[in-house]
Amino acid sequence: MTPETIAAALEGDPGAWRTLVDGTGAYLLGLARRMLRDEAEAEDVVQDIYLRVQRHLGKYDPARPFAPWLRRLAVNHVLNHLRSRKRPLSLDARAEATGAEPEDGRTPSPSSCAGEAERREAVRAAIGGLPEDYRVAVTLRYLGERSVKEVADLLEIPEGTAKIRLFRARALLKDRLEGWL
Image (cartoon, rainbow, N blue to C red; front, side):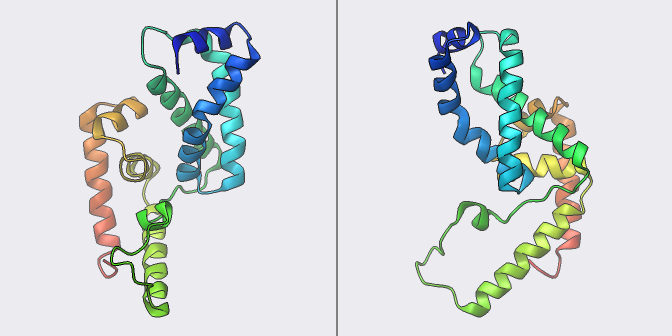
């Protein structure tokens, strides 16, 4: 996003605002989908994020990159939404989230599909049972494919704290999923 586009959007230019929305919409919707796991809810939250962007765009420092500012605003809004709904956050298995095909190109058998579905459900349940701090860190790190430093920055915690949360979450998941993996 160019500083000129952001400045024009801040001044109320509808074309600049449309460019901003078009340029960031897919990213924000993907982030919300991964964190919320509900299409309709993700779309609603993205609309709320854009309202928030509109209100806070004047606080953006054009000397800094726009994407991290937007990502922080979006993650914070989704986290606040999750806290308000008091439902557990969980992850899909990476293959389900990406729609990945088997590497060998063969079609999986029905029994292997059933086993994979059970395994994904076990992972979802195990992650859903994690404390919220761990669930969010795991979502951002592994499904959101963020570095530990980015997780720490997004959650506004020290990098060491992010590492500890991820370590403890992996240990809990390992214990809970011992028979499945």
